[in-house]
Image (cartoon, rainbow, N blue to C red; front, side):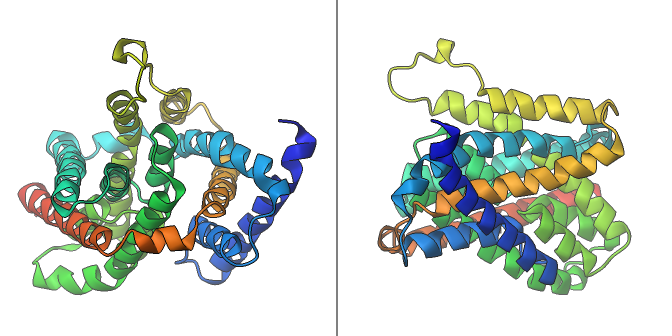
Length: 323
């Protein structure tokens, strides 16, 4: 692939990312990446994605996506996770594992495809859209399945912003316990901040620490998925973790060692958002709406089942440790 052949697709994706940033500036509750993937789907199913953009979009949905996931690692500080204590860490791990395997089980019961169930399981258990995009890159899941999974975590995460604050008093949670519940059960980092900000103070800080501890598990989970869902003909002993997973963990180590200046961290955070927006526009630009609609309503049931699992397990853990 040459720079010349990639330029049209990258320029198109860059414009979509800029539009996502503009929408996010006007409505902070709307994630940049959500706008980008929606614009990609809209383009593909109205005007059509131009053939000249194919090379650049393929590069964006592959290499640029992986780089964005690596930069996500710079948001993580291992020392922050230790503040949760052994029992708090155990709750986070239990939430992730119960949601992941529980969703896969529910997907089989509902007759949902393995690829879509895997994307939903990872999105709901770890960090929403970013996790879905990362898993799509290490498996054979297609763009339509990724788009459906993104829609599910967006719907449920948006509902969480409205419903969870109203449930704090009903469930008998103080502000710290509420923040822990939000961090352990809501999918996207932006949604976590919005949901916990309804209470404010200690709820927000606790929610962010718990949420980023969940994100920290993305690396090990991706390595496991790549190993256990390897493509046919690849012996397990020859399958190393994807390089971008190692990069993600390496970035977290650098951040935890205070080896990155604060000013550079701000630039990295901006670059991460831009790269993921560009990559997910490229994913959306290859989605055919008719194939998305053909998936049917069963995945919607799976999404709500996964949300129920993560919320229930997180609540039980919070009551046991923080309440």
